Image (cartoon, rainbow, N blue to C red; front, top):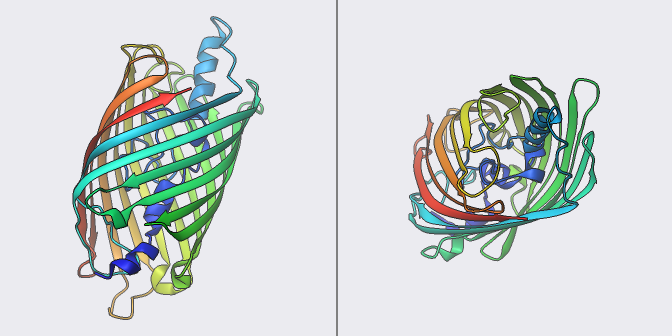
Amino acid sequence: MNTSKSFLALPVSVLLAAIPAGLGAAEATPTEPPAAEPAPPTSTAGEVPAPVSVADFAARRRAAGAAQPAPLQRFGGAISLGAGYDSNVVLLEDQNQVVTELDGFALSAAASGIWRAVARDETRINVMLTAADDEYPDHDEQRLLRVGGQITGLFRWRSVNPGFVVGADRFIIDGEGAATAISASATVASIRRDHVDIAGVEAMQLDYDDIDSASGTLVLASYRHWFLLQPFAARRRVEASVRAGAFRAGTDDESYLTLRPALGWSWRFGAERARGTWDLATALEYELRVYDEAVPSESDAEVAHLAALGAETNWWLSSWLAAGAYARISARSSNIDNRDYSRFQVGLRLTATY
């Protein structure tokens, strides 16, 4: 495999996974991390994480009949450190037919800072800066650094909650610039006593530094339904979702249609974030990708099937500190030789929020 090429051919799936698009990025907690291919997910929406702000709205509706909810802090953030094992450090590159299964120890660090510019019960507008660093001590050349920022909004209008996200991210591999992604999304959520419905659309412009043929625009539409297992308890739910869209790249062999259904379950043992509270989450995902045209070396256009099963648990040591463990298995099956892969990830994570 030409590793120098792989530094620049960062897969679209990795870029999407690392971008904390969607409303959840602004209020994320350890049990609601952005879903990701290179990191263990618990959200069931694929690349778009669960809108945790919507979950907070639901919790406040539940508390409205009892006591006045505590006001949101103007500033906040989180720091996360992780360590584990990855059986397939390098995912299948979009620009390379060869799968190189490098395994080894994996380290991760992430930080985010949030300014809640508007923090009223009826209106939320947040500004967030993020940074994440994924390292593999046995494969230094695969180090991935992401820095970015987002502006998110969530509102209450009559019986629905419209929201938006705009953001930009810069990706650096082995100290060299790899790609830039600019994204925007809009959602509408309906919160009821025993269920939540969320519909959304998203667009992302992806520009590789040195690969114009793989650069392009992704457009997605999604729908999610939360079955709340207790009234207004968004952290105790079963979730079903579906996402469909298209990626239009510089060439037809890099362009594809995508369909991704998913199922998930989450449960919080305890009323709130406090010492002794446990959070559990699982997710099952499937994605179908149908490419527009065959690559020059093949006669047939690729049809790929991707599946993943993940689980995560977190134990709150205090109201601001949680220790967790995760596991994930994923696989890709393709009609093109050498485009299949499997991956297993397991590890521990410590997250501090403020």
